[in-house]
Image 1 (cartoon, rainbow over the protein chains, first blue to last red):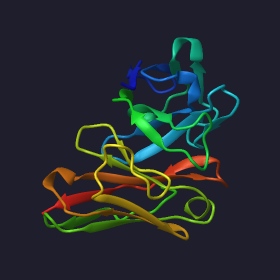
Image 2: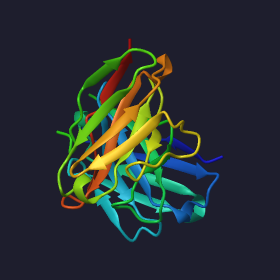
Image 3: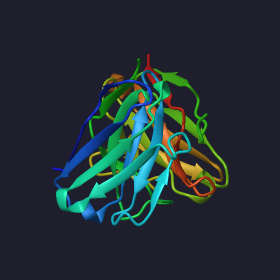
Image 4: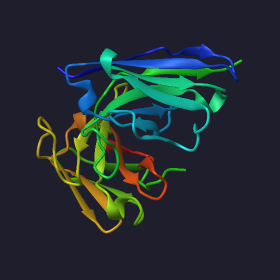
Length: 123
Length: 110
């Protein structure tokens, strides 16, 4: 069974940093691109970042560009999101999601999704 | 501001059919494939439709997808109370180099 388990969320003050992790199992991790998607409380889905199977191509939403860094360790079947200079508007449930191909783009779709890890940015 | 535009809510009676629209532009829906996601209350999103009109295994054929030009539509027939959820469309935007979601549509089965 394909499984994605996020961790690393918590309460953090504005301007501080946090690192999220996503542990993958049940599939060949380096066969697929991976993504982070977030959902603010009571709001819709917002794509945050994507990374190809070999980290050769990375993309970010404008709202996090320059502050967040996505990475992966295929040997550890893990995806990461380093979040710096956090802002109150970054408060959200952060999901990791598996793409269906090694790269992302026109054919991207997300299946499955993890259960998410909650990040709260507040003083 | 979402890349794609969906109606905030739709409603219909059990057993009826409902459609949810998703409007975009030539840089996203017009030239890329659309996927649809169902988010039941308190749960993670789940893939319903991919590549405009394909269903993953396990998704009943009550759910259907279509695309025409820069718009896409999700159809749900034989509505059940268990279909009450938020539904999101999504696609890659080639100009912005981001994946865009619609703002979501809340389905109420009356």
